[in-house]
Length: 160
Image (cartoon, rainbow, N blue to C red):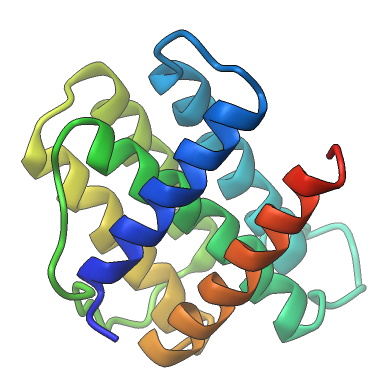
């Protein structure tokens, strides 16, 4: 599957949610905040910043699901501003995860204030860096995205 197809899948899901929930306003800011929350939830599952704890990270499947929760909002924000990506940006560099999450947060905030294509692509690069450091492949991400996409449809059908 080409990466660009994920944008269409997300557009269809968002349309379904907007119709189901009778959304009549621009929800760009809400999606931006949701992305920041999902990023924080992802960091929480990795436990990378919890220097005070000896408990390890959540299972890889849990972390991957949190990761793709962010992908949903990144796709939504992109197509809302008519930005897309044809391929996953490859950033393969070992880094400190805590710093990667701080940098990703700043990158998202920059995009929310200055909605340029360059700033949008920078979010994807930050997420690529995080994915690499979590040992996620593009195939892992696409497969998990599809599974979560279907789960999100089910949630809407069941009054989530």
